[in-house]
Length: 160
Image (tube, rainbow, N blue to C red):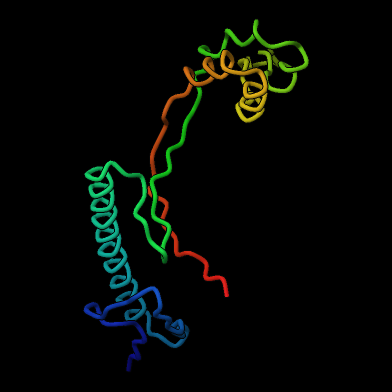
């Protein structure tokens, strides 16, 4: 005899729903495998629904020309990440002094057997460029390349 502690496939599960985990140790092998099959199908169905919901959020944001949906309950916004084209930052080698370069630039070097290319430490570079002003900031901005956009979604913390 099998005791199935899982919800039925048609049941509605909300973020407030908590279920005690089933005690799988007393399940027969076939029942456990059937349950795993069901959970896998539910995971796929929820994943598809999640994807469609996120697509609709992206569509609405694009239609509004917005990056966030205002809500007192949730944070829902598009977060854009950037990389910086390293060769485009080369003019900064002549603009910055040695002390500034030491903070934000690492020259290329060759430990055997591979060469490590030169690189800018962008967080430190941004701080130096802000202190330097518009000319340095313009070079950094020109090197900025959008590398991705993702949806940030979370429930706001309730402050008592």
